[in-house]
Image (cartoon, rainbow, N blue to C red; front, side, top):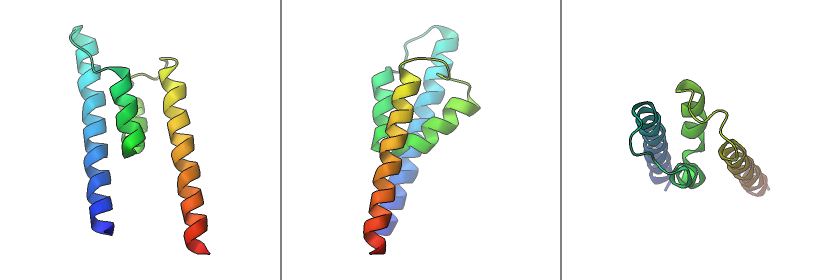
Length: 91
């Protein structure tokens, strides 16, 4: 079960980073863009670390509101859920 979870997280984070990179390239070329909703969904499904990294490394969507606030909200909710799960497992 642990291996499946790790494989899923690696895959979703790779996909998330790739989506951010694709959107950055499309923005530079004024081509079709990846919808912000899709980028946020990828983050919500576990790709938050890659989304945060891509935002900083690619310098993409760093000033775009409300996207930035939404991404931080997803990060906060996931952090709270992880903290709760860790607390419950430690009991």
